[in-house]
Length: 490
Image (cartoon, rainbow, N blue to C red):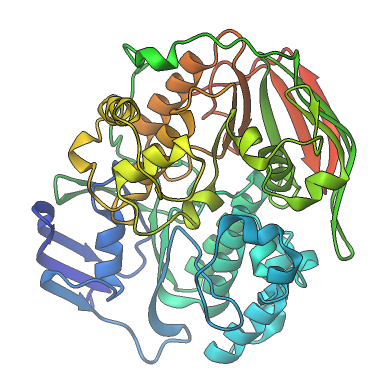
């Protein structure tokens, strides 16, 4: 047997005072395709970055790439989150910017980004076209990157990886934000690439891995446990919040029966019809699932409700019983809404601590830019205790694992005890235990007249309270269903 592709011995890594990797050993031989699992914060992403040469750790990390191979003699790491810059090279972007047509003109298009990358790695753009078509992204080739949904950004990341075909491809939670069809297309592509010699390390807890996966590993307490069969990382029971903070149990008594009413809503960007003739009513106490493929218009629809999209003023839409544009400010709207989305997480103020992130929910700002009262501070502390994050209150949000970042933003969304909760893929980046915790919390919060609009691609990872469904396809409402019984989180 030749040298292993990856040989790791006595690998140690600390973050501040916490030991992340502890004398870890891992050997990856030719033909092995690995699924790496573990709870949020266990160090999976850091281990992957060590292998890719992006993070330094103490110990032996030996890579034996084959310079004679037809595949690129590279290790490619595809991060969970897609980060890009505008045409001037700036990455100082903000959430509402994606809905500003002037800002979008300063952003590369999908085709421009792919062409630049193809030239860089000396690969034909024709290969990218086939991959993008499989992801249903080729028709969006002229769309600015700033206007893409989180799922479409993920597809662009994955397309670049599949174009290059490195000898070792490391994917960090590749199914994050992908619809069902796109997950299937990705798996087909990975199976084909691995059959031609590419090797794979996939970080995922989603249970949707490709058939080529033949080895399994779990990272726990800094060490690796490996097997030829799937390992249950953390059996999850029906975990529930024992007691909500008292301020979250105050009953909701909205003035209007209608929380949301849209009448023949249309949104366009240039020649692209993002939303077409949407008519939808959400009454108080409703619990809606908003579904549809990546790019179907879900995030744009939500941006109208949250007041982040300026095209809301050109629509016939009513929020909390009042016509949009009848004198209310964006802050009047946001005061009654608790909101979370992948994009909000991307663009959140990077200098914010965990405490500041949660407290910013009082003011609906991306970061805390004013003082809070003693009473407000007590509410922040109650939520940090609820989610067992009090020991990390002064840690920068960006330094936390992605799952804990998302939990922090959920706490931010609920701190006002809002009338309407809008949760756009809240379980992205969460492990099974966190997902169960979050959805059980949503079920406890969404009793009585509190209203919920929830976006999620995994139907076995939804709150039990959902009983309505609006499905979008290419910007159009293709179905509205009531009194649903969905397969819910275990």
